[in-house]
Amino acid sequence: MTSEQQEVFEPPAEIIDDAWVKDWKAIEAEATADPRAYWEARANELEWSAPWEKVLDESGAPFYKWFTGARTNIVTNAVDRHLRTARRNKLALIWVGEDTSRVRTFSYFALNREIDRWANILLAMGVEKGDIVTIYLPRIPEIVFAMLACAKIGAIHSVIFAGYSAEALNARIDDSESKLVITADGSWVNGKVFPLKDIVDDAVKFSPSVENVVVVRNTRSDVSMDTVRDHWFEDLIKLPIAKGHCETVQVDSEDPLFILYTSGSTGKPKAILHTHGGYQVGTYTTLKYSFDIKESDRWWCTADPGWVTGHSYLVYGPLLNGATVFMSEGSPTYPYPDVFWQLVEYYGISALYTAPTAIRTLMRFGDAWVNRHDLSSLRLLGSVGEPINPEAWRWFHHVVGKDRCPIIDTWWQTETGMFQITTVPTMPQKPGSAGRPVFGQEAAILDEAGHEVPDGTEGFLVLKNPWPAMMRTLYKDPDRYVSTYWEKYPGVYLTGDAAKRDEDGYIWVIGRTDDVIKVSGHRLGTAEVESALASHPAVAEAAAIGLPHEVKGNAIHCAVILNQGYEPSKELEESLRQHVAETLSPIAKPDGFDFPEKLPKTRSGKIMRRVLRARALGQDEGDLSTLENE
Ligand code: WT7
Image (cartoon, rainbow, N blue to C red; front, top):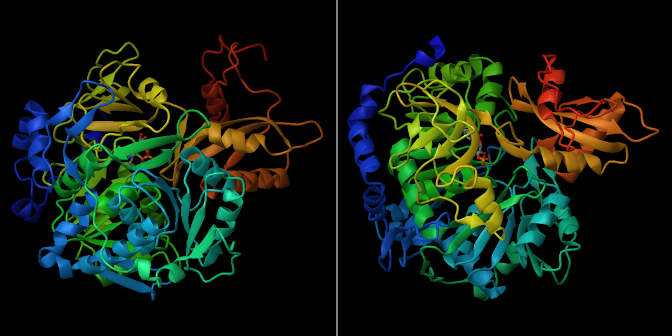
């Protein structure tokens, strides 16, 4: 252990007095002894219209089922039940545009009204229980309404981050066979319009399944509307069918709530499937305990609803807890590097949950931007998406949190649906360690052969217990679900991350062990980047790797073999970068390029990324005995 890893921050007394979890050791011991009883007690805090027969059904493992036989709907718990209490008139959602003078607020009553209108429209458009609706919307309130409206009628939402290209969107729409796509005219990105509707037009041109496109007016930019297929939401809302109450349909606990595409080791994205019953228990409980959420909180999760963090902890988790959700359309540095702090001060944010890449970006602008604002409303800070380096942790703690606010570092994945390794505010925190497995979970660090490694040794991070918000399968690909997560070490869940455990049981996550790169916290597959590059006329073959980057955590570096007649140049690099942005997404733009004669490959033709990484970093290339003749 290095001295850095011994650094411990004890929780401040005022947090402990008032926390949901005071004696965490007792709860941890109790939950570890009987995870089912722990989860059953949590589930009993929510409403179900019919009880479960079993808390956990392991008979079809690894296709686990939770709260089998129960009837519920996540909207009953996230919205409907609050309407019967004084929460009806409290704020559910405060939204601020990139232009911060655009503000929209919704009480729980108003949120419900909007969801009802959306749900009525979906039903009128023929959306039925079990249908998949594709949502390609920016960070505006309508994305929340549309997601909840799908859930309300038992439809399955498939949110695609509104930064993906037409090609990527098309692949996801086709895979899910959506009949309906919900989008906007455009989104605001640093003062410019990103043309969402144009992208949708390109994406659905050859999609056999899409019958209707609903378009929300946001940027008021010019778009073309197909007279049969496309509908302005603002026209639909005026129709009589949009009016009135829409019943929240009670579904089976195991009925799908959403699919969410994420990157894996191959070029084909995986559709992670989550269900109503277990997911609501998992997201409700973990947000409540780890962020000590109370209904008095103003909770700001800066993630986009297009990622799982937005699903679990911008939309569902906080509403299940009856908190007030704060949502901002803009980025952390536009128009000024203090827009975050200005919003925290003005809206009295009590908990701020963001990503290490945002923290590092803001840190580089210096303390003065932070110090000109009164941040005394903050009680808790949070981090997610990639390991947070101790330097950024300390800056966040000291400069933003004034040494008063615990930092909750949360390790989890699209697949896990909810936090898996984190702390609660009353636990000591160690900068750089995500913390301990959540109550009811146990983690292990294994070597290649599946033996637990000694503390302090790096190995493969696995999770030993099933948990309620776990993915149920990969949509349309159950075999890949089994082979990716459950086959290497039978009986435990393979996370794909490397980690160490220290003598206090704290986990130190190191990073991915597979061909997944986290760039600014965004998850990308090397194969996706490579296939985007390969469709450029200059490219014969390409290999992508992640290299350490001070702000982004990792940056994409590509080794490219050029076709005959092409020469390396700055212009060509820029053209390749643009091409990746257009065919995949701007978030996937490579940082650097190499143009070698050949790619290092094993005799069986597998690219040796380890060698590429060593070359790019100017390090020793290590054992090259398996390399085919260069
Ligand atoms: C991967 C999952 C689930 C939140 C958003 C990311 C990395 C995530 C942490 C953290 C270290 C982290 C892991 C993981 N990761 N949070 N607190 N500390 N690494 O979800 O896009 O599915 O990515 O993100 O490598 O496997 P995701």
